[in-house]
Each structure stands twice: as C-alpha cells, then as structure tokens.
Picture (tube, rainbow, N blue to C red):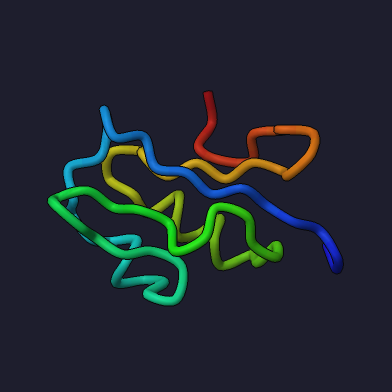
Length: 76
C-alpha cells in the first residue's frame, strides 16, 4: 500500500451529519452545514480510512483507489 493514493468522498444524499467520521479521523474529515466532508479528496492510503468509512451509519463515506476508481468501501 506504500505509495498508493485514495480518493475520499461523502455522498450528500446519504450523509446525515452524524460526525462519526470527523470524530474518528479529524485530520481527514469535518462537518459543515450538517454534512461531512473530506479535508482533502486525494490522500495517502491509510487502513484507518477503511475503518472510518465502514463506521459511517449511513454508508455515505466512499474510499476509492485514485486513478483506477476501484471502490474499496462501502460495498455496493
């Protein structure tokens, strides 16, 4: 995974602004106007981000491989 880059996104139509992602990874997510948002869309790959996305109660946090667009989580 060293050198890999991931793309983070939050689906506005699913997000309820619970703040679980921001509380779990405040260096990666924040809540503004009732919706979670990534601090940066493209980041270095970190296993923690999979855990954060999987903890979202609405499955609104998406992690994809930058370049290929492969969806890592949530499952489709």
